[in-house]
Length: 335
Image 1 (tube, helix red, strand yellow):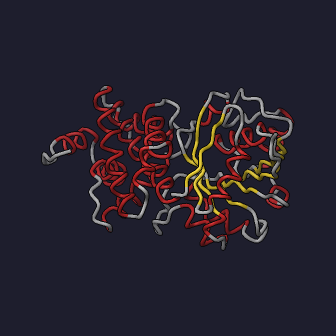
Image 2: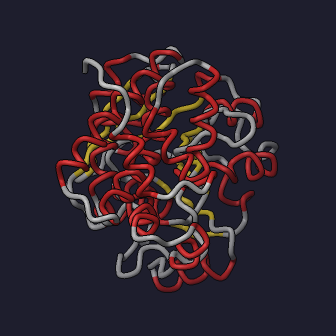
């Protein structure tokens, strides 16, 4: 028997729309907020989000709206599905109308530029919410595959295990299996850092390198993510799970991954501007996060050579060929 919960999904991009479908398919009452009124109208009239999930029929039970107040009214779970670098601005506009006892679920995978805060920290700071009210959803979750109801698993991380279980019960659809975790730091770092490693894998693939190179980048990428996690107080076991290795493999390997495909364009010799234009003005989150994560690692004296290399390509003009030479020419050491 389903636990019926009132859910507000704030953001109608591909992942927000997909999660709205998952929550609806799990039997909940779901409102989907879209920034653009015309998109909300299109979803309502056609039961499809043509901008982000063309061809996917959305349940009739999803109520689209462009009114944040209408979406948030009486919601017991608020899913924050806006990009990481836009989260602070949106939360500032919503903070007074978010129900005071609602569980806030972050979907954004990134580190905030300038402050170097994780998304749960941004939510706590801006919305004035106790950390125990904030959950993070992370894992190998490529939106279109889940929207097509291909079986997938995810992690719900929250300091309050009972609150994590509440979200777990609400989002458990027949094709979507959620697990719980209390390691918010580890789950957030895994989600943010994997985008940077996916850029590196994309660059290597675009440059003509094969599966050995990809596997090496994934494996050594996981090692440097875990080093940063330990320095920041995460549980090392998290990085061998869905929010660590699982998310990393999916994002680094799939052509559905925006970071992987953006990196491929850079690997083929395109500039950031050309890659951005080719992706309709969208910049992969790993481009911005690479600077924040590199700064975090530097401040904590954590060695993250792949992250440093991606940062150098994206922000210092390093050529991808020189990046590969630099990574391969590092001093030899034990694994």
